[in-house]
Amino acid sequence: MRNKVDSLPDESRCSRRDFLKTLSLGAIALRPSSIRAQVGPTKFFSREKTDRSKKIIVIGAGLAGLTAAYELTLAGHDVTVLEARNRAGGRVLTVRDFADDLYAEAGGEWVEHNHDYMHRYVEEFGLGLYRGSFIDTEQETLNFSPRSREPHEKLQSIIKQIKPFEDKNPSRAEYDRLSFYQLLKQINAPAEMISQMQREVSNLMAINIESISALHLLSEFALPESRASFRIAGGNDLVPKSLASRLSEKIHYSRPVLKIEHNAAGVIVTFLENGSQQQLTSERIIIAAPFTCVRHIEFAPALSEQKMKTIRALSYGQILKAPLQFRERFWLKAKGERRRSLTGLIGSVYEATGGQPGPRGLLTAYIPDKSGMEIARLGVDDRLKKILAAVTELHPEAGRYFEGGAVKWWQEDEWAGGTYAYFRPGESVSLRPRIAEPEGRIHFAGEHTASWQGYMNGAIESGHRAAREAQEASS
Ligand SMILES: Cc1cc2nc3c(=O)[nH]c(=O)nc-3n(C[C@H](O)[C@H](O)[C@H](O)COP(=O)(O)OP(=O)(O)OC[C@H]3O[C@@H](n4cnc5c(N)ncnc54)[C@H](O)[C@@H]3O)c2cc1C
Image (cartoon, rainbow, N blue to C red; front, side, top):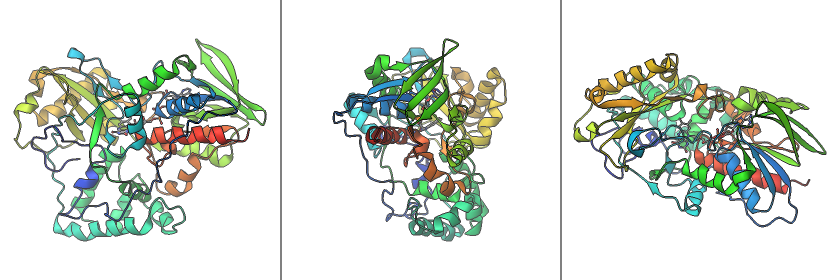
């Protein structure tokens, strides 16, 4: 996150991946300038009317499933969406339970300037974007000591050399075998650099540096750099809501899928409807649910051994987000003051209501990985107390103005089971290429299948790709 935080008015920003820029030594950014977008060109589904309409079932009304369903419908296919929840949007969740119609993002939050798939829908649905004012209360500086210069430069040259998205590069496997922590040790990163990286990587990837494949993180560093981050004016859920309203009766809510039977003739999907099992048939199916959920669906016959292994093995990081409501935006008064360093529990605290009318306001406490787990172990009331106590360490006035808050821990959400996918050491090479591969009549979408993996943009990207696959399949 940010290194220097005083007051950050209108154009300030801090995406969860913004730290890539801040992890710099003077002019040397971690992301080398020669690294260009390695995620492949943006490729939208064509929308040209099909001459053979197919019956297609989509599982999941998150951004990925909604995209596939919407695009296929425009092309003239007969689409049905089965969604386990009673709402669309999945891991895009705008919390609207606050006073004065204030809202905050409990799931996907920042839309980067280069998220082309997302921007197309924003434009098409007439939505607005705003940067919002942002007060990040984190005060930790990320300026490494001169001792970090050499390991930092080594990291840069590794990223340049391995081209993380190029499957054929043999040194990818070598870096995949290592955790990012092991890689830092190997390049003699000093302790202070390791601990700063630990903190920032937890914020970024929702997991610690011992657990994540070095190659996966290097791939993240190689994503195209964002120049600006935005949120959707009125709430990010306006994107899934816009898609869902255009699909209207094609989406069936509160219908968790239990079983998928598939053969050369077609697909039979069994799902729950008001407590009893129902079935639907189709020619193709797009599964746009996270693998944490797919592993509970029965497949008959079973998918290939490799695919089943991938579905079972894929890991998901953890973030707890807690938007807290305050009677006044006391933090604005502290403008220009240096604040104390974030220690312990909280990864970041930032204003959720920049751009929304006051005087009330919301601060979001962003608590990744093990710290999130520590809070999640508490009872519901104690969670808020503990979070408020941590925020009060930073802002002694917080307790005086506090009115209430919400806590979202994605790990305990039955239909998410985590925040977004990540690869453990060894898995970036062995699992990543298999995730999106179709099996017979079954196609896979979702952020975990995308090159923009872990982003809303990736979920939409995967919806376009899966729609294309389902349309182009010969039967
Ligand atoms: C805390 C947090 C912070 C994030 N921050 C950002 C950010 O700043 N920027 C960004 O771009 N992205 C961010 N993301 C990631 C982004 O939100 C996700 O990548 C994206 O929303 C995933 O969309 P999806 O369609 O792949 O999956 P989901 O949104 O999870 O949709 C899958 C759907 O499938 C349904 N489902 C599951 N099982 C079944 C079943 N058996 N039957 C029927 N339906 C089922 C689920 O209910 C769900 O609605 C964040 C995510 C989280 C959780």
